[in-house]
Image (tube, rainbow, N blue to C red; front, side, top):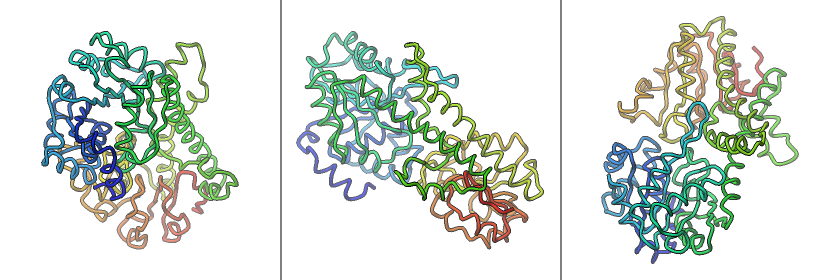
Length: 458
């Protein structure tokens, strides 16, 4: 459930508005379902729909593939009390709703090509049944100029109605939507942009009902689109720089975490090195596409994108080096992967880098034994993680290498002496999350490696 402070804030919002309003959530992905739960908890009637009927069916049963222990109880509660319902027909949901939140994502394929066709099709279907005075809010990240030049135009041309006169239209994307939780979405600072004052005011009243932070409002939609992309790309570049510094520290015998603690300026300048940079993956391509159309070269953004793509290879090299220090090779080595969930201490979907990391290790002949204490209740329908081991003991027994992939609190308290009895010594520990003390690990006889932790002795 949401913490009490969040519940009180949401429920004590504009209660009159919530009791009279029906919110249609177009998209049953993570972004859509989190919005649906927050609006339902704030007292709104909510209708969830999606172009994918299987997703709608799953939600109607109170089942989702992410944040199961946090979100599913709230989802099921509101399904039972009738505050939240589902609809297979998008047009039907749009007609019944006076507020429509569109979370249909922008698609970026493997070649970096940006595709807005899904969100365009969604808005065409909404436009066919659009009536006066409805509020439509785009909650998906899009490129600069897309909201006004494509999305608004689609709605107006299909419906024959005008924004700001007949209906209200705004842009309020969720930053880093793929990593949000209910609590983080309720607490994140939301940007609301519209081209007219009435749309801005209407949309702001809606979004303010589900957020605890003050809104950032603007009548400059293009600037808002750019602001969201800039923030995402800046974060992407920060990860790239952190990983670059981490590699340097490993080669020069410096502890990256110690360096962070010695900074004389803002310590947030240096983020934690990571193998998982999915959280802002689409933004660089949206920017790069627009920049190319304008004849602008975004050299730093492109370099950061390429650099982050090399992080997984570096992770594989760390595992290889650690095993080499044990006199072993990747081929036929048993590797225990501790932590799969993308969110610490929660049952969430696997990290986006998990599948790639597994395939890269398997291609080199390694035998993998993944374990995550928060994903043990997952069903066989979750194909990515059906081979999870049932216990930590099973995962590490006979392991040649133990990899910390997600830094759950449980792994911060690992009993290294017991691990030594279970592992196939000499064995290695590779810490991608920076949660273990290298000296303590090596004092128990393990070979240690970690992102940016250039302080191992063996």
